[in-house]
Image (cartoon, rainbow, N blue to C red; front, side, top):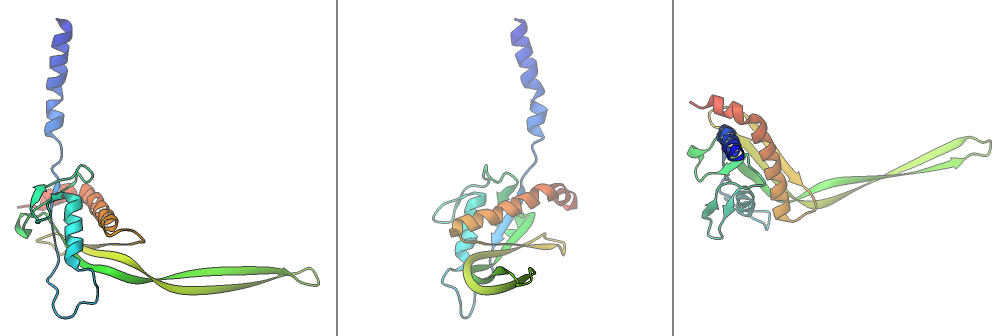
Length: 181
């Protein structure tokens, strides 16, 4: 009988801990409509969908089946900017050039025993997939850019963007809550 009472007391004592689980930051992901000519074959709307799908579980028709993800517990996807604590605008999705430099050096020994060095630097430009976003807090002038450019699949790049935003949300969750009316 003593064991049963002890188990009941322990499980009741964990209830306040479960109730204190921090609420995720509500995020609205969007892009401004593209007008005029478009340079990239991959529309920004694809990256919006990829990012939304990493935060929650989004169906092929765009409906939200699950608002949070176990991988990113600090974020919760919402359907309108009015519901959001933060806004994440996708500003670029496409191939972007980067410059890689390679330096080679040669060391030679002179006739009188001295050393001579010669180096050559070669710069090459290559294009890699990039997603750029701007996070803003409604009602404030705060904004922060999160961009990822790497040789990876688009969904992996979206994952890396969300990972950065999730870390930001974890650090700033309390500040966001205290600024709410």
